[in-house]
Length: 255
Image 1 (cartoon, rainbow, N blue to C red):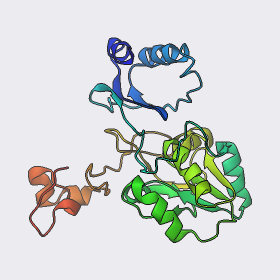
Image 2 (cartoon, rainbow, N blue to C red):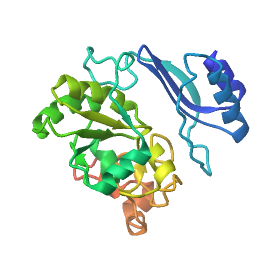
Image 3 (cartoon, one colour):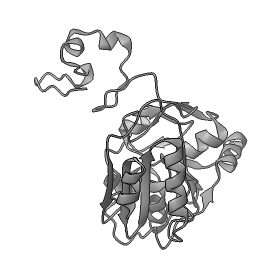
């Protein structure tokens, strides 16, 4: 039924369903988005979904699909069940106040390294992970003080739903997650305490502190920024190859 309703409204994007919950990343006309949101709200299972909106000059998704998965985002720790327990949520406004006050916390970016490299919060710890399945081991190896409060964040809050209970299981005493993630914070508080841009999982690749599509230009493979001088290089002009991805081994990855 989700697929039928979405297609009838000419929506594009992806809906992920699992025992853990639902994850929605969709685009469409103002009218279609409002109608789809109203449709979801009529179902008590989806009534408390928190939507995060931004505007785009182009359609950031190429098709519409509904997928059923074992995990919304793979962590690989089956005993962590976010549908049963999550850590306390810290509102964007409260998070900004804590940052203003300079509270003694461990500020933890739960995202992958390629996301962190283009933007994060001031003073945040980058675990330098390539996938979320590396998160449990990285936390144990890099954070020693389990008494200090931990405030986590990710793009929209999904990863933190699992990361929070995981940290508690590892013995961390006081754990919070930024409610709605980076995107909700930028919507509510702007770019205060934030530097760079926020990677997003659609054709825009990144949005700025105003939630507008990045003008920087990034390689969709390695997510390195592509300023004009790099785009002018022969290998890029010839076949649109990102210079960072043009390795000595002769393998070319197309941007």
